[in-house]
Image 1 (cartoon, one colour):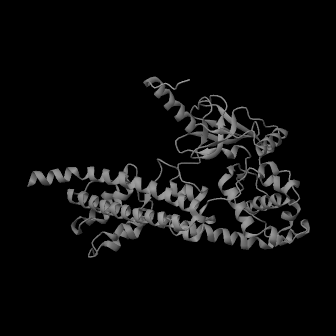
Image 2 (tube, rainbow, N blue to C red):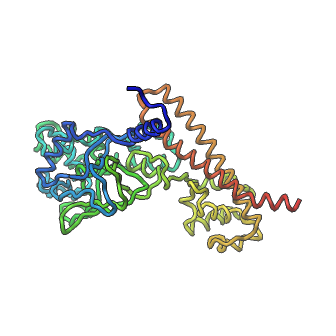
Image 3 (tube, rainbow, N blue to C red):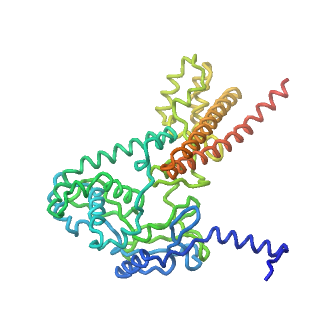
Length: 447
């Protein structure tokens, strides 16, 4: 049969192509998901709305079997399926946790249980769930040091803090691990290695949902709010969806209710929160394309880089910004420089005779045309500086991808982050240019 060549057939082919690109490939037939479904059914859960699938761009996720309506509960996972500190206390680890002083943290209990159950292999009751968990993660704490060095400065500092925190977590937990030796025939040092604990830490950090537990004397005073939710945690993040997610005390289920509709065979998303891409990468190990919350952060040293070094009031101005919480969270976004950034620049650009008006600046009042124009000029210079820096890093990443094949996936993640930031900066540059138009018009009129 000959393929149609007319306009109608071309439109039909385009629709089929778009459908095949966005539609996921059903994975419910795979052995690991068959076993997981059996395991969940034994615990009184059998989902009728969602099936596991692999999607272009997002990877493994959940696909709607039917059309989902706004306000509909898309998943209701029984308490018996949740992995919480109650699960750990009721297990073979409970007696050891009760004896250990000072009491271990809820996080340590969950991580210890995950490592122990993974080590048990086929003997683990939780094997069907453990089998579908990622074997490795892409949080900064798991990335190569040379890759982390390519991060934007604010993210790099937080990534280094994260790595130090996990190292300390491991170091301070070794005594507790040693106390578990009677449970194992092998040396606990080989079971509870840094690599094993890192995997468990990332599992909890990236996949846990919020379920508040009653305070136990067996644990430290840290909040006990993390629960692992098998199957439910296959849902991917989208910043454009709204959901209601919480543990229902009446049904004793963790429920997710969507605030938007979803067509049959589409990927179903949840929202982890209004996070920018640096936060998403730090906490979850991924970057969201076209994220409306994405932004580029301006640090204090960059803020003053293009200001006059002869300004005798600069230190006082910086002090005022710090005192009024205007020195952090200064950003460029898709809609240009943030109000906080422009306000900080306006205060820093005050002339000596205008300095007494600094309170009015913080309240959003216009001081003078000169102050407005100067602050926009500085914002534009900072924006162009970031564009040049971003292009330079992207070029470096491209060269590294050619030379270091082993780190290609990690470098691609960094490349995606910087590419998104470049788009934001380019959008900001256009907006800044339009904001300066009135001042150029006035100048032409005067001349």
